[in-house]
Image 1 (cartoon, one colour):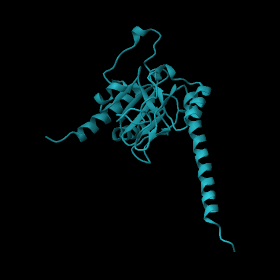
Image 2: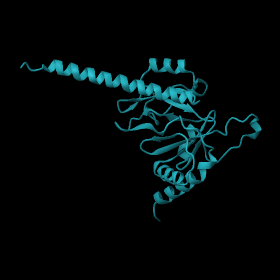
Image 3: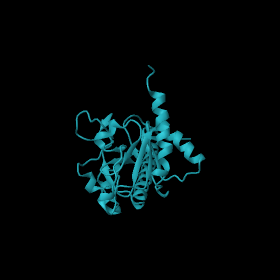
Length: 231
């Protein structure tokens, strides 16, 4: 029996890899479009390149976690055609979703997020979309308080977080007007398994943030107490 040549085996493996890559790209496209259809405005973001970021900033402080353009807030859209054009132009791009329009995001340390998930599930609280930003954060998507008909009715919160103030919020961050989060599925440069992925997808109705806030703040307080150095 004639043995299969190494070239034939390589071509067969390459074909399987290409098919798997095409399938993964289709799934990714479907997930992004599903988020847009749920009303989440999207804008393209940087992606991992080698061990760093695709942007041209030397020593990027937030590799693969930031929008491509400074005008991301005006770019962000739910338009299917525009999202597909961005994907076709750069298939590797991550995407952010602008908060404070269709939704807010309550962003907590991973340990606190998983503890809050257990509590909320046990209490029968309705959860909306929930994402994990490996390895360290869990994102709870909620309705927004950031687009009232009357601007005078908008109320600030000490938990409000913007891209430039995230380091000031090691516990709970409330992404509202003027902020964004990476949208699943996104890849991160920390390792092969580092990603932003859905635990519960955008098909779930958005809950009111106040229905989650007590469990999240309690879980964050326990987390911060456990991680504080002993005196």
